[in-house]
Length: 83
Picture 1 (cartoon, rainbow, N blue to C red):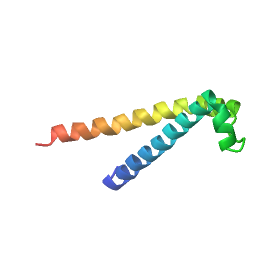
Picture 2 (cartoon, rainbow, N blue to C red):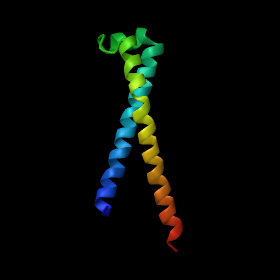
Picture 3 (cartoon, one colour):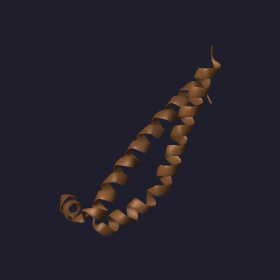
Picture 4 (tube, rainbow, N blue to C red):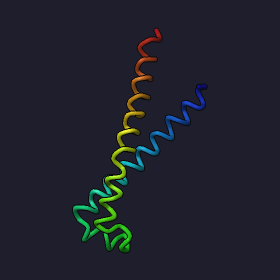
């Protein structure tokens, strides 16, 4: 892979990870405090919907975190190998 493609992949990973983390927190809050979230989202994010979204975000969160850490380890490996 060339450097430009790696930068795009790195940026895309970070953006997607940020979106998934925000949704994960919001839906988790929607499960525990659905009395607040449901009126704020005009009924779109009910307790059941929050729970389903929250469960379905677990695997993408784990995958994106793994890719994020892989980028960090690769960066650290390159930094240590260059004098």
